[in-house]
Image (cartoon, rainbow, N blue to C red; front, side):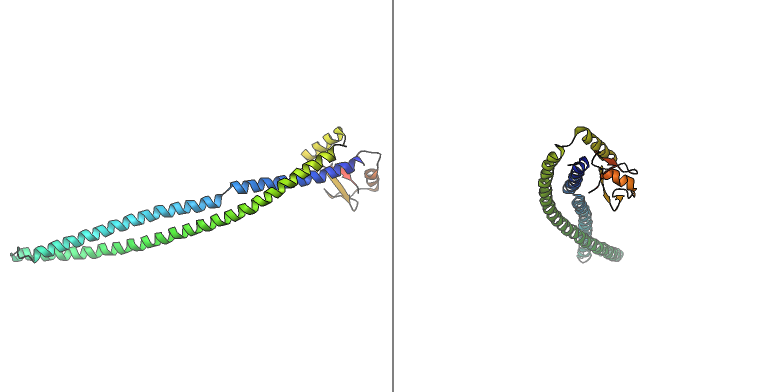
Length: 234
């Protein structure tokens, strides 16, 4: 087996291992990154705070309305009790009751606004809860799918490692050092196949002499004159 063929086979294994390794890292990040869930939880917490404020405001307006009604009842009871006989005092009492009733209308309007705001806040909170449930469900389904894929890829990676060990054993250590250096500086692709008389990695068309040199079995390997990768002619 020529050196270039051995390196080419090794390159195929390494390229696939790079793909599997990258995908496993992507899956790991997705499994650990629950940003959408955290955002949904944050929204629920926000709606809880808004709802509590709305409920507190509603309670305050209800208490104010109740106190105002009590004042009116007390004032009317005093007016009709017969204890007040002076005409001026009776008129003042009636005017006071009228003012209390006018203010009651204002308070009841505020109470109605507070009730509407409370209802709106409850709806927003329920919507946030529903969204969180949906996000959790999607996240669980996604995790199940990703976990299954992760297990399959880990088994494949183990198989590739075994195959790589077998592919490396017959290769010269100096040749492997050259290969590793090229992999490091050529974005993981040290070996380039020749397709239709051109380097498949960079597209450079090879001259007849370069093609003959690349086919030669007397040399361990030949480089692409442009990208510097080792050429493999099938």
